[in-house]
Image (cartoon, rainbow, N blue to C red):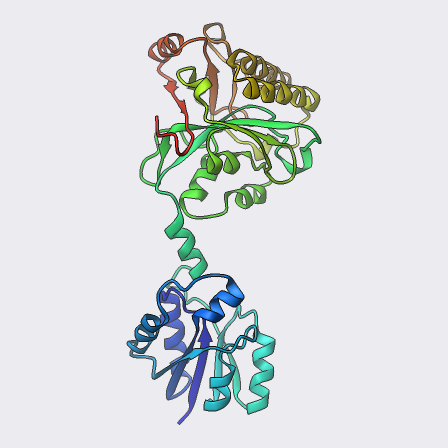
Length: 364
C-alpha cells in the first residue's frame, strides 16, 4: 500500500483544499492529512483558529478522499507535522507549488526515503483562494464612502511627496456597496480604493501598485475630514468629523472620465500645491470653511495652469476644483450656506448633494 501524507493549517477549509486532497489521494492508496493545532497557529501566525480544533478534525475526517487525520503540534516552524510523519513513515509527502517550507520538507523526506511531490495549488476550474483571503472577505465592510480632496493632491504620491506638506481630504456619503453605486465610474472620487476595500483588499498597496497616491484608501478607511502628512505612506496629522462642511458641499460631473496615472508625469506647480495644503490644514484646525475655500481656489489655480478645462458655474459657489489629480470626472463645489448648495443642485442636472461621513457619527 502506497501511503501519501499532506500537511497545512487548513484553518478555513475551502474548495482548493478539497481538490488538493483529491489530487494527493490519486498518488497512492491511503491519504493522511495533518492540520496545525491551535498552539501552532498562534505561535507562527499570531492568529486564533477559525473554529475549535475538534471541529476541524471532524470536518477533515468526513471527506471521502481522506483516510486518516492527525493534528500537528510540533512548534518547529514549517514542521508541525514532523512527529506524525516520522512515526507513520509515508511513501510520499505531497505539497503545493507555493509551499514556503519546501526545503525543510525535502530534507525531512530525505531522512525517511519518502518521495517529495509538488502539486498545483489551485486547479483551473477554481479561482485562487487562501484562508487569509477568505478572512479578508469576511471582514470587508458592506458599504464604504468615497472621498473629495481639497488640497495637497499629488503630495501623497511617494515620488512627489514633500517634507512638511499636507494632504487634506474628506470621506463622503452617500456610501457605495458592491451592488449599489450612485456615482459615475472613473470620476476622481477614489472609487478603485473603495472597491478594493469592499473586497477585503489592502487599498493602500493596491493604489501604490498603480503608481498613484495613497490618499484615497487612507481617508476611505479612516473616514472623516482628515489632514495627512505628505510621505510615502499615510500618516494622520489631524481629523475632524466634518460637521464644518455639513450642507456646504456638492459634486458636479464634467461628462469626462477621470484618469490619474496617464497624467502623473506632467509638469505642475508643486510649490503652490504645497502652500494650498498648509492653508487647508490650518482651515481644518480652525474649523473654518472660508479658509478651506481659499485653499480650494489655490488648488484650482494649479489645475488651470496645468491645462484643465475651466469649470462652469464658478460664480455660484465659494470655491471649486476637480476632484483628484486627473482631468475630468467630478468637481467639488463649496458654498456659503446649505440654501446656496441646494439651489445649485436644483438648477444643474449634473450636480449632486454629498455630505461629510465619519464612521461612528452616523450616516448622512
